[in-house]
Image (tube, rainbow, N blue to C red; front, side):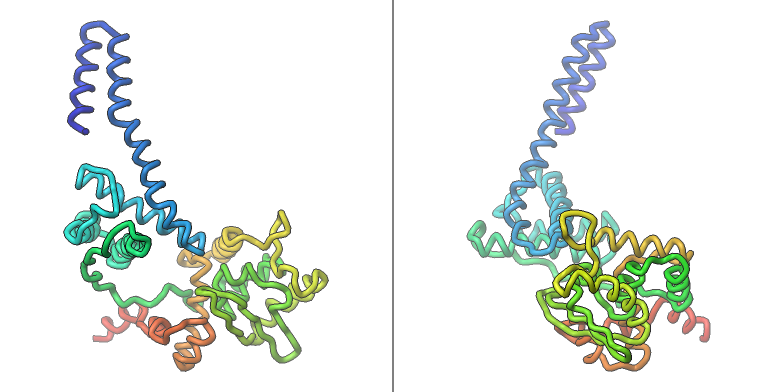
Amino acid sequence: MGLRLLLLDCLAVWCRALFKPALFHRVRFLAFLVFFAPQKHRRKQRALVFAEFLATSRSGATRRAYHEDLGYFARWFEVSRVEELCPGKVTAVNLQDYQSHLAITCRLAPTTANRRLAAVKAWLAWCAETGAIKALPRFPKRLAEPQRPPRSLERVDENRLLRALERQGSERDRALLGLMLFAGLRVGEAVKLKVGDVEIKERRGKVVVAYGKGMKWREVPFSAKARALVGPWLEKQGAVGPHGWLFPGRTNGGHLTVKAAQNAVKKYVYLGRLSEQAAAHALRHTFATRMVRAGVGLDVVAQILGHARVETTAKYTRARWTELEEAVERR
């Protein structure tokens, strides 16, 4: 394909050299039809190949991640095999080559490379279940990932964020960030809370996450800090009734969007002049890290966070980079 385009381009330049501009433009248009038009067709074909599989994903974020990762694989397959992607054409050798391409050619981190292969595996497993292919091809062994802890806020950055909230934050934003930082809710769980899901009394309180990640139900007790941040907003929203949204959106009677909540976190990260950029999920990681460092048992932390396996919670016990640096300096 690239050779044909090069030859046509050379022909077009030759036509212009012969003072035939009309012929020049016709040849360049032919080059477009040969190369760029098929590219647009391929993008549509990829969308059709993955559309039915992506429709089975419950989470919008999962669909977007799968769509991006599968798009990478489709483009690599078409370039390396010089043919359109079809589930029946994917072999174990292709998968091994793709892993090598991600790790050696693209120099991707093992976590990213494993995630992209996991998306391909999920798609092909679905194809096997639906009968599109006879069996799932053998996948290469996962790349070893560095044992790093989830990114959480340093204590000084946490204090800066809280000061920015106190000075410039609205009651709604204080409650929203308080639920993530002092109750460990995921941003998607926080925005979907109903007023009746939160209960605050003088010396205790709790939040009920009706259907969190994986459709799991859990209760999380409130600390004094959580009650102080969430209480005023809950009192104000109490008028809408227990079935109203705790964080209503601007239109259509829906709840606040995840994107809007993430932007709120970015706002106070900026206002607080934090030393590092922090996403909304870093607040949940900070909550979990503080509990583990305080000596709370992993089984208890797992129950509060809604983890199905304690092994998932164990990642919060890993040493941070600053701790590794301090350890090396002590040598």
